Image (tube, rainbow, N blue to C red; front, side, top):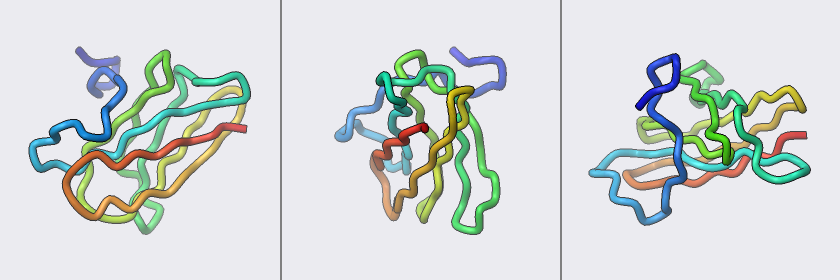
Length: 101
């Protein structure tokens, strides 16, 4: 199932999930009251270039399939913005939490 932009349905990803050798950047967007659903989450490469965007699930979950490297994940929500960095050097799930203020 996809949202309107062709992105896969966003669900929580277990840290030990089998990614079939893929690099997965995944996590949760939170605000002062807990998980923030509906935030737009952008993936930026090491040069700050846009690589992709998904809308967080109602529980604030998001995931991207990416190449190995350093990434910035930015969340945009009507209540504020937040970002975090993650180094995803090899296959597996690379967790990142984004606090929106």
